[in-house]
Length: 386
Image (cartoon, rainbow, N blue to C red; front, side):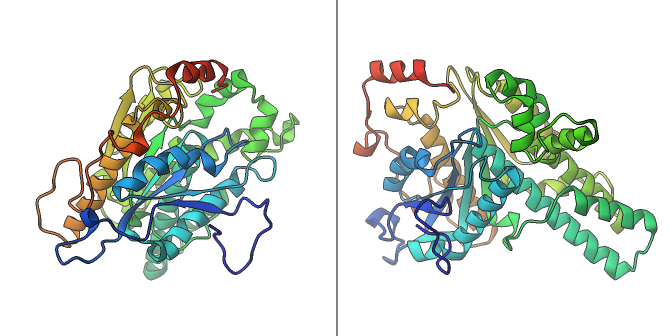
């Protein structure tokens, strides 16, 4: 599915997305009046080390969730060396905008959108979410400064510094429109991940090129090259967001800690990680979840015992283990239904682990049967570089 109808890209373009699902609702998905309910939407951002990512990695997720009334959208994004991380972030940001603008044409509900990412896709998704929060906070701050006619040089300097640190995104949707964000096997902190990347074959120069540095070792560029890892790190962007919120609280005369209100700016979050992940150590998930909990951001941590980096999206579902898909389904139902109740759309008591509009997630469904014999999956796991 092409994201931009006005300007058709050539066949080899990465500006396309796949939609898994149907405009037609099953009897279980219809309300009491027999009308078709719009479907919850999962945007799945695939991984690939920022170099080999491709939207087809979302096929197994789409195959698993579509039969149960979830519309799954897997957007593509340009990889390195075609662009660096800034271009990837812009691609995903505009993909999310496309979903909000057009998903109801395909039977989805733009009020029930959950963002899910795996590996590099989860990293990019985390950057987009944190950047949208930063953009919102800085917009609020500019409005407040303008209304208060705040002209102090110190404030102007802080604001100008913020503008230099992160360019604003081009989209117009609000981060609060996302019902939740599920981050899977993600490198949340690029600074601590640098030696891990190097061990996996991404040397220091290549890392700097991917994340926007100059890629050389000249002394006059070293500071800028080191800064880009914090600039594009979800861990550091969340901390920056909180600092911006504290500054905004001080400017408005409110209590500067303000953590209980800060959490409401972010969508609900879930961090998922395999305990045997050798590509992104499990310590990444633990450190990130600790930060989110410290800031009282709504967060769930799910550890998959004995799972590798790619087990959630590849080996496990091919063997018929859909624990990851079930978790995404249940969180999507929970988060989207909570939004309904918060907006007063429905008054019925929530049925645990499912939406009253959707069918139960049943792993006996034909689409959830094993695809490949276990012995072949294990052989492929041996050859898998991740």
